[in-house]
Image 1 (tube, rainbow, N blue to C red):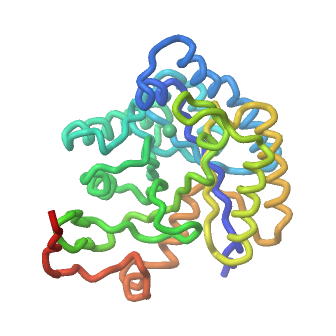
Image 2: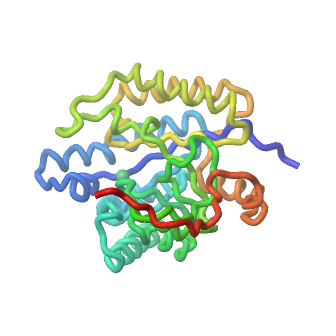
Image 3: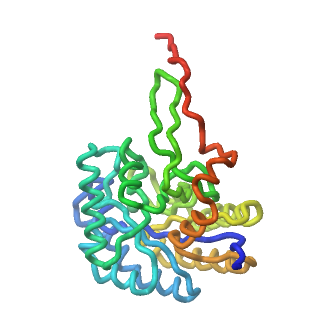
Length: 302
Ligand SMILES: [Zn+2]
């Protein structure tokens, strides 16, 4: 029987290209869009770095990017990397009504499937805020995992379905679904650290980001055997030369540790799901499984 890796590293790239500027920042001018164009421009460098270390990675791609750069997407797929769902024009689910959210999910899926000929089985939300319907849509569409939630750092868990949020009564926990959560963290995301935006200001130096990412990896390696280190990057951010060299140093550091494997999220998630069947996992004491609470209404002074 094969032994479980000590730690799985999933390098993930949100290939947003133009869609993030259109869908999140609401900009349509040539300068803003050209920042998105840097993503496909830098893709050969990123693919070369991955090939240098024989790494299989995961790329989350909006349908809009698949239609704008089908040749780039096909190359990523042909080089053996996983393609995951990432909306259509990088919409934030929480801003959509249910009908629109379902339509956007279908459009994104259709564009990816048409371009690479395979139906993606993983999802990362473009703009992390879920709507009350997002988890239902992912489960109904047979997604194996989501890589957006932050309820742990390096330990997967099954996502609850049917939580009821109210400010006037006790929080109602739903039941675990079949959807595997692969934890996401802003700390392990390149955009917020490195990229200038008018709202967030200038980025940090690469050395500071390297220090944070390396320390997080070292903790995971020492303390979370069998866990997953999910690093979120964007080709238009990490693709600059100095940043890619920082990533190369980090890859060297991680790969020097015995028992570390680099793999796609779907490979990790399916192995984790097989090793932790839902019914068995529910019996284990996990903070993510809670009894549905029939407690009293909260009385707030007004
Ligand atoms: Zn994105």
